[in-house]
Length: 111
Image 1 (cartoon, one colour):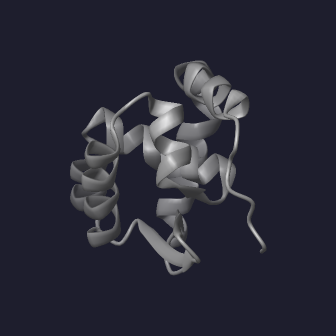
Image 2 (image 1 turned 30 degrees about the horizontal axis):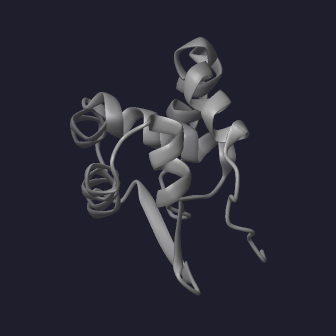
């Protein structure tokens, strides 16, 4: 991944919010993100596919759930940028985080 690719990937507000929420929570599933972003599942899934294709996110299946996390082989500079963005923009994500925290019936992760 190079700076232009990262910028293009995060240029969409929904993808930027997804990336930062995943960076904050370490791992989220589609239902977590639909609740946090108050968006429909097909829209979230489409953005997750683009984030996965760009190499920013990785996924894993656990039963009926698919969990997304930052790709473990991301260059250090990309991880640092994401965490800097996250730390500097907590107000921007506050409503999304509140929705996520208030979500009932969140899937339980085994690991």
